[in-house]
Length: 172
Image 1 (tube, rainbow, N blue to C red):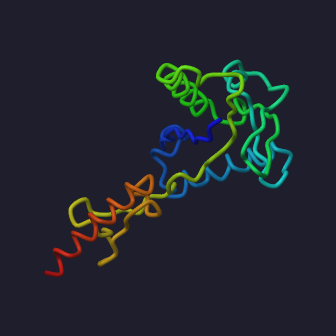
Image 2 (image 1 turned 120 degrees about the vertical axis):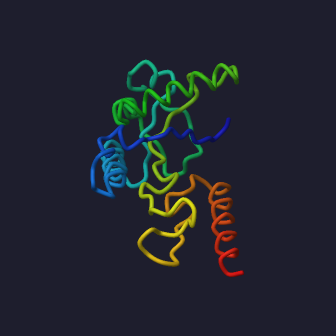
């Protein structure tokens, strides 16, 4: 048994945010998706909608859900319908690749739980590509995951190091 998260990209153009002036468009999408997941679980606090991987691919509700390490619990829901089509399709593509590389990944015992929606900031604070400073706020250096310039612990650390180096060079 393994416990793993699978993340797929959501681009602004996927949800109509590409040309909008609304800086919180992606955040609103994330919030709406979380609400949809919550409602799908019958508004039970933290219970995760779940579906067997084979049923996720077949587009059918799972009659039963295997035991999970997710402590609040799971309940059978049509995850393939809860998630937007572009997310479901990207997940299916990833699962096929995983199964090609790790035989046995795609089984009836594998379960898809919805949704881990907080992998990185849905808002990106602007910064000058050379100075790394905010273009309108002097001496403000947005960096890392919370500022939308990284997508995880390692990339956030590297981004922080890069910004620290720029600031250090300015102080010399």
